[in-house]
Length: 169
Image 1 (cartoon, rainbow, N blue to C red):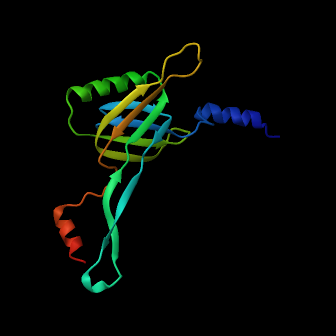
Image 2: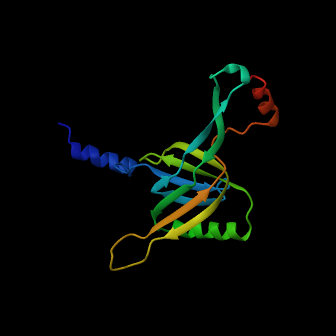
Image 3: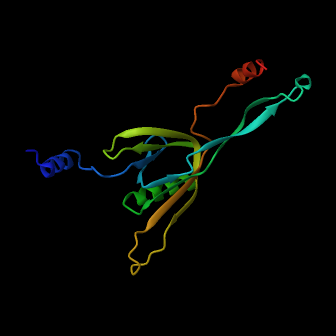
């Protein structure tokens, strides 16, 4: 007869993280700054302004195409931990000498394997905060980091490609 308790214990020993949910790791400038794992990521989104193109002989017909690409700011949150110092070091470095940097957010499954990664271009921090400290409250201190960026899609076109795309219309 199979003992489910022994199997569950063996799986826990083997993998160590069974039951944990997804988590996110963040690195800046190709692993120069590892900002650790984060509990919550929001704002990882992209939208396009719809544009219409209508010529004089089309009547009421028009061509609809994607216009300006807009990326939202990304907001990261987690319980304050040892990696909070790494964030402070990174913020200090960026505020002393800013130059365009890249970064990546990776989604990991409950076993720690990387599922997908978003590589962001030209990012910089726009806000950092930590919740109020109150020992009598019994709550965990939550660290929040917000960054702006110019995108995570590989959608940059050279001027030659832009001209050839317009020639199709």
